[in-house]
Image (cartoon, rainbow, N blue to C red):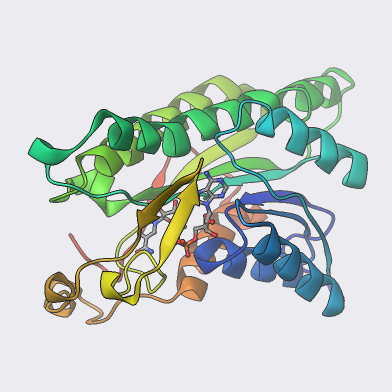
Length: 276
Ligand SMILES: NC(=O)c1ccc[n+]([C@@H]2O[C@H](COP(=O)([O-])OP(=O)(O)OC[C@H]3O[C@@H](n4cnc5c(N)ncnc54)[C@H](O)[C@@H]3O)[C@@H](O)[C@H]2O)c1
C-alpha cells in the first residue's frame, strides 16, 4: 500500500519528545526515513529505536541545534545514511520567559539562537542537497523531487504574548525567514511553510511547578506555565480544549504531504481555532 511519504527522507529537529517525537513516529508510519535528533541523546535514540522496532526506518543523530557545526554535521550524516534530504522540519525549541523589564540579554539571545539562527543554518547547510540537487534535476529535464522545509512557529509570535518578548520575536522572525526561503527556492520547486501552534499539551505548557527543566549549554531553564496562569484558556479556543502532540504533528504532516504541493510561504495555524 502506498503511503504519503514513501521514499522521502526527513530530518526533524527536537524529535526526542513532544511534538517532534509525534511527528517522527507519524512520518515513519507514512513511509519516510526519519533522522531523529534532539539535545538529549537518550530520548533521541529511544524514538529512533522505537521506529525501527515498529518496522520503520530511522537513525538518531543527537546534538544541540545551536552548535556552530551541528547543521553541517547532521546534513552529512543524513546523506551518508540515506543519500538525500527531502524534508527538513525545524521544530527544536523551548521557552525562557520573563516580563520585558526583567528579560536578560542572555534570555533574549538564547531564543534568537534556537528559533532563528539554528533554522537558518540548517536550511543553508541543506543547499547542496535541496536547492542544488533540484537545480541539477531540472537542468537534466527531470521533474524535481518533492522537497520542503517546515518551520515551527507559535501564536505567541503571530499575536504576541505576555512574558515572552524573546520567544514571540523569534517565532515571528521565523515567519519572515519562511517567506524568504519560499521566494528564493520556489524556482527549484522547494516549498517552505511555517506551522504555528496554539496551546498544545507538552512539557512547555504543563504546570511549571512540575519542575521540568531544559539544560542548554550548562544552564538549567525552568519549563512550563505557572499553574495559576494555566486555567481558563479553553473558552478562548473554539474547540474548547488544548491540542495533543499528535494533533500538532498532523499539521506538520499536512504541510509535508505531496497534497500540499502548491502551498508555500504559508503559516498554518494549528490552534483549535484560537485567535480567529
Ligand atoms: N507546546 C505548545 O503549546 C507549543 C506552542 C507553540 C509552539 N510550540 C513549538 O513547538 C516546538 C516543539 O515544542 P514541544 O511543545 O514539543 O516541546 P518539548 O519540550 O516537548 O519538545 C521540544 C524538544 O526540542 C528539544 N530541544 C530544545 N532545544 C534544543 C536545542 N538547542 N537543540 C536540540 N534540541 C533542542 C528538547 O530537548 C525537546 O525534546 C517548539 O519549537 C515550540 O516552541 C509549542
